[in-house]
Image (cartoon, rainbow, N blue to C red; front, side):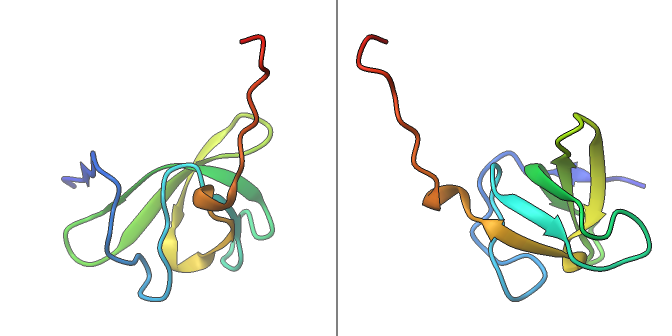
Length: 88
């Protein structure tokens, strides 16, 4: 199977109803495995026939691939605020 990873932020929605970007905090909302798990999006791609996937890192450090239609975005990256120490 030839899977081509997207190198730029994706502007069109994944799974039709939401946008997902690298860095978003997501939850596996349904499915047989990993349901309820939370992770951070590392990458996303489609397999060329209309199925979207996301690669996520779990708090344990494991990297998993989830079907995008089965995830829910909990915290979009653009809502996160990063504070920098003034000494840095």
